[in-house]
Length: 199
Length: 199
DNA sequence: CGTACCATTGATCAGGTTCAATGCTCGTGG
DNA sequence: CCACGAGCATTGAACCTGATCAATGGTACG
Image 1 (cartoon, rainbow over the protein chains, first blue to last red):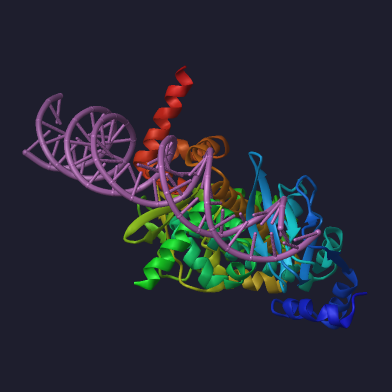
Image 2: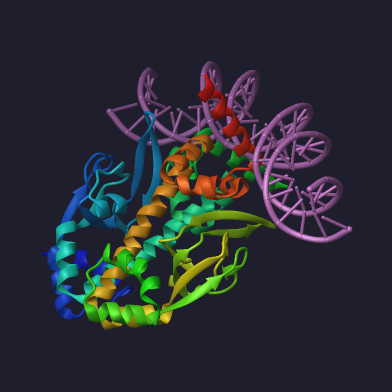
């Protein structure tokens, strides 16, 4: 059983979506296990089937895939949010991405089998699952649109506005990959922006 | 009440996800209304809140957004599948996209309010909602990866492999926008591919 | 202090964009 | 039935942005 202190943030998160009763909440808490991942180490590795959802209590992560022998950073995850590979989790296929801690991290793990148990045991659980999935759709769809409709420079400006934490905490090479460009290009975009600001 | 003939495909679709009992199924059927959309006309227009999910019995659609005074085609939808703007439907915000029939189309509409009624009335409904949302996540995530990791040419080849219906049925200008490029560029990519095939 | 890693800058290259012109096809009206 | 026009696909030429390769600069850590 995770400590009160460790449970407080995830509990708050859950209540943003659904009104668990005492029983559901206790069951939920009982399913969680605490996990530490030191800086640079992996929570999930490409090739494994992702069989968990993890809530980040401390630290932040990046996900990346190997594409033609190159690491390409795909996304970032911060404390107070869940991290998982949804496609792998749901389809039970090996993941194509690796989740790496960018700082020493503390997580609460929820196993896939336990989630299924929850879904079978109560309507409210099922609703939680639905609302989370819907929440994720909105986020991914947003990303999709930005890749399709915006230039790299616009994406960078948008990132500054909507996820300043990324700019502040993540090395530039990773941000570049996230934006779909090379580090050199990001460097030049930043230079351009700095110059046009001066005028 | 929609006819047996109109109901058969959607029923099959639903059973791919969930085991509705007779009561759930009857309730589901009772919530559907039939709708015709002639070629070129809109099922949903940008600016409206999307308040329905529609199952396509006949015809196909494209979704597009206006970006800087330009229509940009975002996706295609074929018969035997649902069409909706998930982000608008879920967040109750005005849609940024328009859904246009590319052929005379027949649909079954399910209203948002009815869906909510379903979710409240049974666990199985809620599960259906969750599974559909999860299914959609896998699809969007795929698109996301292709935009981030692949070149336009690779995306086109991938599209031919995974969605040949699109290549066969959709005007090239729309396909180009879907791939994130200009029609001229798609034309040249096709030429390149045809030439390299000849050798 | 030195090394390793990351960000920056420069030079060149390649592919997609833009603008303009031509070709092609299909549907409509004379 | 043919002729015309509209809309889409193709092609050409010039351009522009991001990619690539190579070199330099900066900084943190052993």
